[in-house]
Image (cartoon, helix red, strand yellow):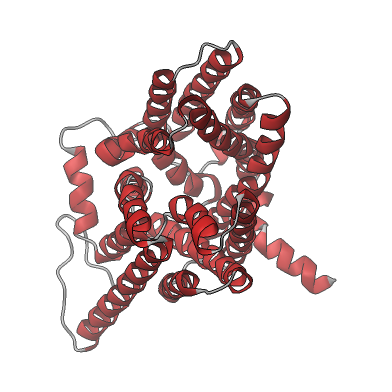
Amino acid sequence: MTRVRLASARTFRSLRIRNYRLFFLGQLASLCGTWMQTVALSWLVLTLTHRAVDVGVVTALQFVPMLVAGPWGGVIADRFDKRRTLVTTQAAMAVWAAVLATLTLSGVIQVWMIYLLAFLTGCANLVDVPTRQAFVVEMVGPEEVANAVGLNSAIFNAARIVGPAVAGVLILTVGTGTCFLLNAVSFVAVIAGLVAMRPQELHGQEPVPRARGQIIEGLRYVWARPELRSPLLLMAVVGTLGFNFAVVIPVLAKQAFAGNAGTFGLMTSVMGVGSLVGALGTASRARPTGYLLLGSCLVFGATATMAAAAPTLSLELPVLAVVGASSIAFIATLNSTLQLRSSAAMRGRVMALYAMVFLGSTPIGGPLVGWISQHFGPRWGLGLGGVATLAGGLAFGGGVLYARRRLAIGEVVAPPANEPAAA
């Protein structure tokens, strides 16, 4: 029992920090509402149009702003107080959800209205995502950022299990409008937590003053540092081709295993449980390491490739659990690595680029993998992501070994301009 308590205390140690505890509880409620809205929105669009392509359009509209204008969101995150910025973005998304609920419950909802509200939600996320990512280190400090990022991933995956299940019951009993209304209410928990925080306990700094060329400055900052550039390039490859489970898994369940909605739900739930385990395992570690980043990437790629080739559902399910665990371990480790290796003045712009290559790649990778799955089969779509992830991980590992070899033979690399050389 003592060993279990020690492991639990190590895994959930960031919750001892009051400000993060408020954020954690608020996010838990809000993310459940977000997943409820995601499921209900897809069902509503299918009900209105009976076309799967319209569901894809709605999904793309939520991520297009991040793809097109991601660096601007990072500049806003660095330029303004992050806690106040999050209150604004969360309030905006609550308003859009309330409008969607009102239109749906009143029976006047149309597809173009859904398109518009999806785009507006994406615009709010353009600022919210990098600000929220960069705000983690301000709540817990550099020593606990890896633990906090892991716990954030854990509540995301816990909500991914609970939210869709609740949404399914509500859609059958009271309709999609109630899901949107509950999502709007769930934002109150986040906003209340942000308002109740103690600013004097935050590990923050003064916002970056307004100046010209801050986007270019952020891009140059990342490109001049291999410890930031390499993980972001790796995330661009994996995010574009590897994280398309929402596109591949339902087709795989139906075509490869001759299943139905229950099969799809089972496969999704197994991945969700694996992801939750992976997130908690990552949270238990003190700091992210290059070995964990590389190892989780290679395991993710290898198991995704195995899942593409699994001949039966009984073999597919345990492999999908490992895919879920390794993919979340990879994301959480890369996220905390970027936060720890970037300066406070640049953290918002760095995390905006992270969100851009991860979330913003969805409008590119999703249709591509969907086209491959449609014309060649879902196994090819999933296999492409697995092979691309493996190749990206091997290239990343090779780059690390090459850099260490250069240091071992005494080559000196000049530091970026206006910065002292590292010891």
